[in-house]
Image 1: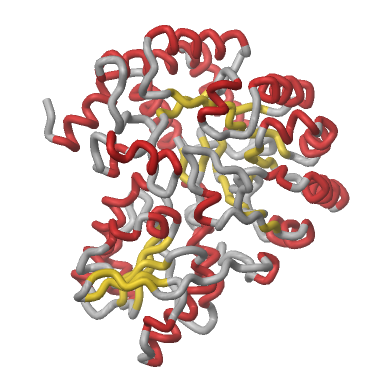
Image 2: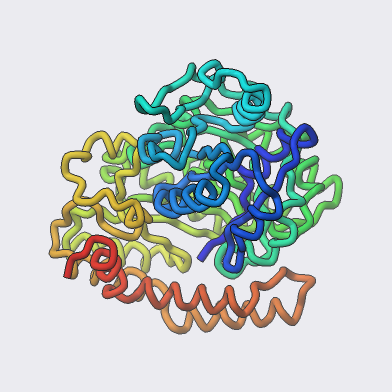
Length: 455
């Protein structure tokens, strides 16, 4: 349902040029790793592993690189790699970059070029014959404005492949890092050492002006962390007559408290927002350490509807749910007319408080199943019944009529390119096939069977 620009790698690449010759390969369908390696002949190769579900493929890619170029220094970075580096304690990975890569990677490559001792480079976990060696922790980057603009030229040729649902030709934009909250299921605050840093509105506009596409996904976990900054960004967009369509993420308490800001952002092109509703009552939110209330969720939905903002609301399903809990969740979605609701299964991802709390009950460490759509701790219902109820959430939310509406919307976009860029027929087909899988409980069960050898 989503393929987004490799913004993290583009930001690291920007810190390496022009001192180093850099190539970035996004492993989209049809990407030829072998041909790229042979043409480029790398001295070093860095791979991004931010999501737990990507661990197996990252290891496979690292092995392929090392096998083809044994002399290349292979290292891995990203959120998951930083928070669970032991997953990469294998002979074909030389090091893990933990924390922000823009500072560590240039220093690492300079040390390699000079033949210096890598143990002196902060921010590394080195794989040695005696195990993993952790170098001193590197301080986080104090001023995000000091970073170079992302090296977007690498991914520009793949712009048509990036999309969120049917919103195609999608670019990504980071305007801040970190979150002050400590939700049980999230590791962002851990990765960024409980600090929040922002780019200035002027820096944000400078980045926007380099983006070719009209559709932009703002990667910040809470774009409204600073209301004055968000309003200044909107003002600058309006003053300069920049016409973009933004998808952003925000907490419902921030939205509920600042309806005037939401209206201004909508005028400036912030047309779609992802909100973490998470639970249908305050007690459930409290159990997740969300620091929010059901009343704020309700108020935020009213604010967004008045402003004409498209709402994607995420809701968390506990493995402990029974039929009555699923029924209450379906009723909530229906009564609040959440036409774009997304459901995730509460998953103990490494680096989260939840993982520390339930690690003894985890039933599998096959990382492929940590996609937020599979249960990796025991469920109260029998697993087949649990997935039947989970798939029913999507069946009841996304009716054939709704899907037909999306198809019509996509066709309209193809007719009127002035309104928005449409996705390709191939992407549209993959989205439809994904919907089919999401509403079929057999697909969820099959993933357990394929990956764990069960029947």
